[in-house]
Image 1: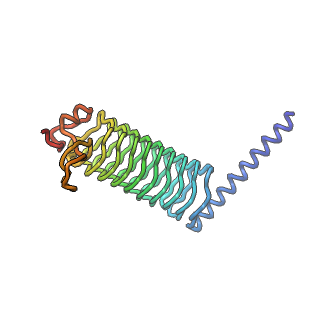
Image 2 (image 1 turned 90 degrees about the vertical axis):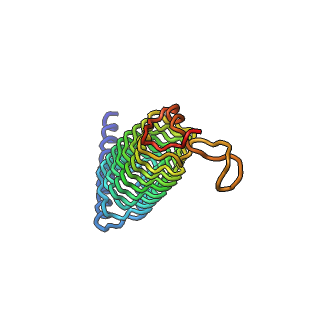
Image 3 (image 1 turned 90 degrees about the horizontal axis):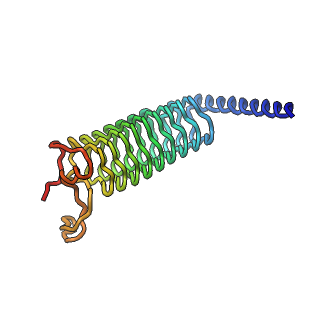
Length: 261
């Protein structure tokens, strides 16, 4: 019985080694050619893979382990459920990438172009996304913590029911972004652009709006005169200094709020 089990384990080890060597050869060939578009690399252990300057557009990395990997040309790639721990995507082209349920830990996406990408139910921790372009990104139900997004473009991005904790959004452009129902505890919005940003129903405990103009952001809906339609009815409005304080936000004389009535 032990002999049979030993043979099985040896066979499994040899098969694993063969698969690893075959994968290494495939990556080496892709790297040498510089062309890896539409590659099927799902459910693979890609730890430390160096794909810098290799066109990987349209490739699938579903549920793969990309710990310590390097990627910079991966538009429309599918990273659903992938492990992106310590992954270097600095200045990468990741437009329309899918990162739903991905684990993004200590990753570098500084200055990356991630336009119209999806991060639904993703977990982003201790990562750097400074000055990245994630306009129209979708972060619904995502969890983002201890992450820097300074100067990041997030116009028209959607964060419905997302959970933030200690995220730095200083100087970020969140124009027309949807954050309704999100938890924004400890988020720094210093000097961020919040034109028509929707904060309705958000938990603003510890959210820092110092040095920020929130007069055009949306915090509630009330009855009044709509300038655009020139009719009376429901209108979206901002919040006063006192209202923000009651919501637990951090404000001071440098915060530009809606004037109190």
